[in-house]
Length: 60
Image (cartoon, rainbow, N blue to C red; front, side, top):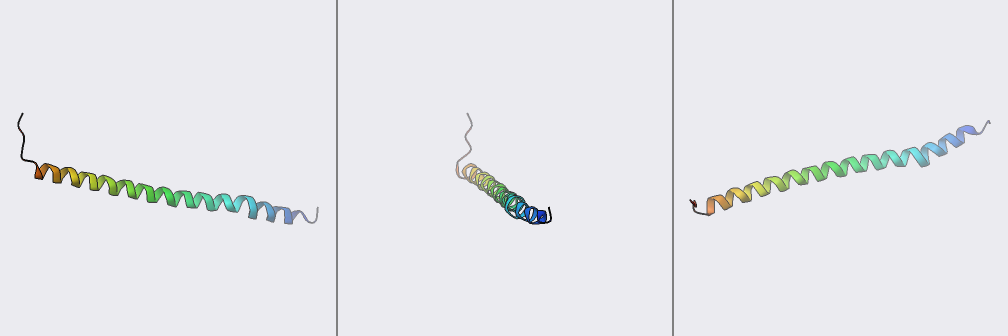
């Protein structure tokens, strides 16, 4: 059992470390997607405002 610390190094390096890296990558990707969603909403709102401004007021 003297060499058991090698096993722990192996487990941490090849199992825990990649999972942590994946988590970080996924959270970064999620943040980017949220930012893009916000930008898309802002652009859609601007387009709606422009359409309202361009169209003459319609009274039904």
